[in-house]
Length: 109
Length: 114
Image 1: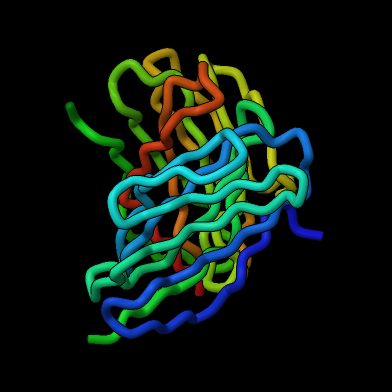
Image 2: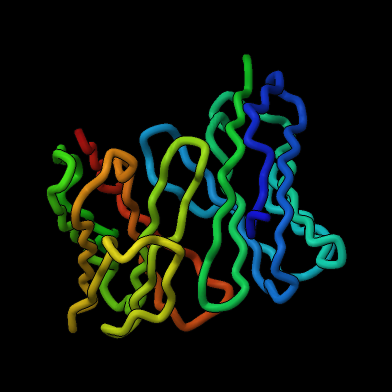
């Protein structure tokens, strides 16, 4: 079992729709959870982090964490073509960050 | 504030050769992590150095090695290159002192092994 698993996609949504990206992790000791966005040919950049159960909202982005289910998700509301990228889920079971394989999102105008 | 700098950006090697990649972290950052990125595999963790010591290591063969210098700059070396080593190698820097901390990535070194 991979330590961090994501649906590889690709995920395609129309402009203005909600994009839902999911991630599960295996280490119950994980304490911090991150979502990075990587545009094609570019390096990853942090868009959100979460460490408490529940939802965390930042603009059009909402991260959701359920530690009991070892599940973290990212919702993108009012998706824009500029949101088209690969989204990487990252988990921090200690002073070390593990990444999932990423989900490629395409937002169609 | 200067970002993370990786050199070289692109390189082509042949099987059996070795390669050394360099990473200069953000000033003040003492942690440098190295990742291998291939299509479908995502970011695979290689190792992390903190204050010149390897603090964590991923599941890669011994052909992959690294080191960190007193100025926090880090190098990784891959010996006896194989075709499967073709990938984008990313380094990321951070202070290395917090659980909730952003990793800052360099642009990567794209290695092609022929």
